[in-house]
Image (cartoon, rainbow, N blue to C red; front, top):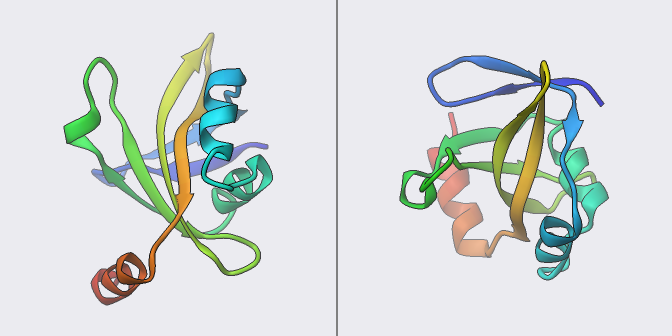
Length: 109
């Protein structure tokens, strides 16, 4: 999977794929979100905003999107470089609550 991700500030970053291991795999699935749903969300329009309160040691971002089955999803992730490639490393993911969805839809352009 190669795709472009719009990061805060308007830059577009070309990502090569996802960086999974047991730690982030298990944490993301702990909230009932499949790895497929997370990866598919990045293939659709997705809003990416900074997460400065959790950006200690590395820049963390929040992605808000919709899965193939029309569920709103919140994904916390960072971008990792390996050699010349950039990968999305999901840190946590969960489906959004109704109040969050309402807030997001009102704020979205």
